[in-house]
Image (tube, rainbow, N blue to C red; front, side, top):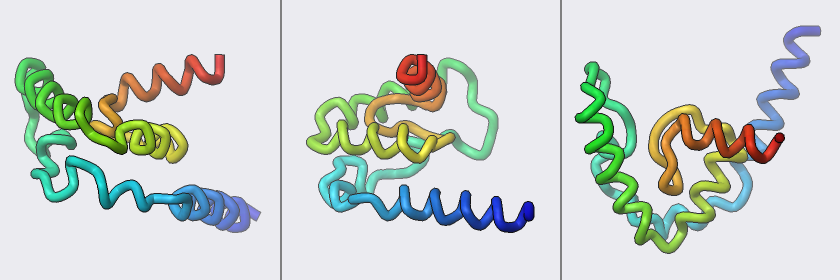
Length: 100
């Protein structure tokens, strides 16, 4: 029974990922250094994180597909990185506000 639940969850998530992602071809971050948008594997200081996130968010702020990117990250509950100009914590708060 537990396996069936996992299968249903996997199918549901796959359907979410299969939603229109054509917008990704127009994303300004495409081809950028992923380390700008995602935390490094080493521990970064708070100031380093804030600076990195500010640079990533600056890219997002001018991006023509920012809205689609953010909607995708919220729909898939993306747990990592800067998506649509929001970090993980900001997205969790946005989801909580939507549910509220």
